[in-house]
Length: 210
Length: 421
Image (cartoon, rainbow over the protein chains, first blue to last red):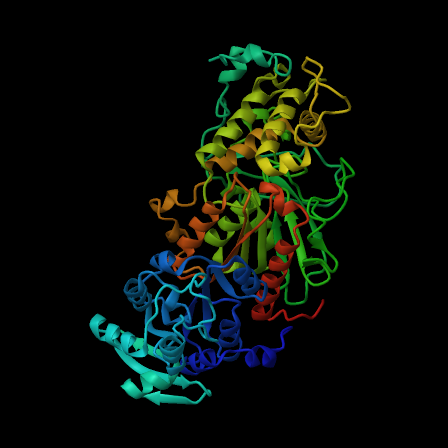
């Protein structure tokens, strides 16, 4: 009531908008690595979801709680274990997967505590990144991967195709894939081929238990 | 039993007698089931009084029945028409109901005047704030200095042992007396956090949101140890006289002051002490090769001890520290804390402070994990500060910002909006 809702909505990243569109109103949502809580705030106030968050950074948590969100300071990689099975309809992981050590463990936990997982991440096979490496001979730095190699929190550099192979390996079902290319065109895809792996800058996956 | 090193402390604490070291608070106490009436000894303090347990005595955790007995409470702000804007503030060990006004005994500002008041974080132009002096307290609620009508004398250690659960049960009767079916919020720091947690676990249908600050779901061994030091300091004071000092000219002031001094150290942090005092000397250029308060920290602690005895009853200190020691929410749930909060609809906001080693962040995190396990709505922040456990009483803008934001968010959901009453 004291918050400019439209302002918050306007500040959503494109992948966050796509994530929000995947979530049914009134559902139970956990946003893992929720940052300043911008997405969670929109979900709570516009979709009437029962929204919770986990965030590692103290500053992020403080901002979330001071805007009235149910967010706890914690580590996605150790703290999901405390939640019961099927506690949520959706567990969101937006732009955090590259920084995760135990990727399979985290995905498995997300789908234990949630019926569905929504994961957004940058595609390391995006053509601009390939070109940086191929022609420039340097580790790519982009708006989605904005860190120099020596200071990046990201430890996993993976492609769209890598991720689909992992989901297959884990026996998880992909319900929806939305890709975003460099100019910001959004496309819903049934599967990822070489061409979409080249042109997609980032993607959002809706995943469920196999 | 005698303290092996008691002679070393002779300057402050005279050697204890065998009698008062072995006196157990349970000696001479009535059997469980007997109804204990309490006549208030203090009646001249400002604020509200309520006689409880007159028709139906209140059952204590010890099994004893209490009634009639008096509780003292204060309120600030105005209860709205549908009685939905009430906030119960739970005070800490040595706090009382004078949250946001000058203390009637010391004249000093209320203990949470920074937080509770018109336009402040807990805005009394918007919320109706209640604070009840805890059972066994000494500011008007039934406690050991009150009169036992069976003898006509103060109870002393014949007053029944009180637990956090009992304190909260009495608060619930006050809330019901005020016609409030559901508190918008219960807020408390330290022992107040214990009460807040107990409220949320015991009466979840009466609490919309709970804000335990610098708290724990159990009193740790270290905390029990510090309390025991404080109690032994009181009991070692010959003026304590087995707890029966009320009719005498002297009170166990030195014992209580030492208890306060020891406890006060636990409320601060090493870095805060270093910043504030360091090794600075008190009004002198060099150490005196004696046992005067050479150091500023000594002088400060002695002052803390001295000023405490003016406003606090030594037996109350024994009882309330004991209530904290007995607190262990998981115990009655087979050590599974999560079960205490099962199906709780209460929205929680836990706040801890980085330099608090008395109720460290790990204790709050333990509660958060238990709340996660039952998928309760919970917010949890750890505030960066060097002020130690006492940070919740001090000027901490980030803490105020978070408390205010959480309350606003909860008020929106509770339908309180931003309208003032």
